[in-house]
Length: 161
Image 1 (tube, rainbow, N blue to C red):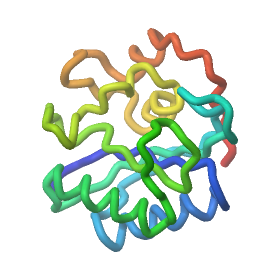
Image 2 (cartoon, helix red, strand yellow):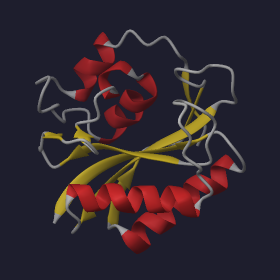
Image 3 (cartoon, helix red, strand yellow):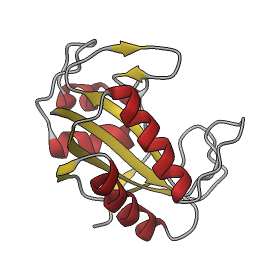
Image 4 (cartoon, helix red, strand yellow):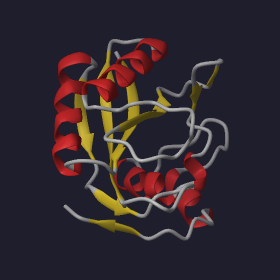
């Protein structure tokens, strides 16, 4: 079994329902959710002219290899109405990113793990600190608490439930 941390988020449609449905589909198609962070509301990152996001990090046990987990994540996004366009950081019903996969460092054309921007985004680090404050980033060699303290992102991350 492999352990992966995923961030789920969306800012289009029924955001709370979409998070719940994403968790259900992850259990059905990708693995067992060991633990989940609280749900957080955050202003959009990158393209700020859009609705706020609801985000949550889940830790899963999965039999899937990293590339197969990515394919499942994209499939789940599609099932929840995600339409991928050419523009980055646009409104979406669901976005699922692999933050960590075991302690692996993966750099392929399709997948980079650990997620290349996670240390720059409070909406990722705050829920990661809830779940695994001492988890060490295998490239940066710092734990989640240290990365959050060093993060220059000034977007407010508010726990909703």
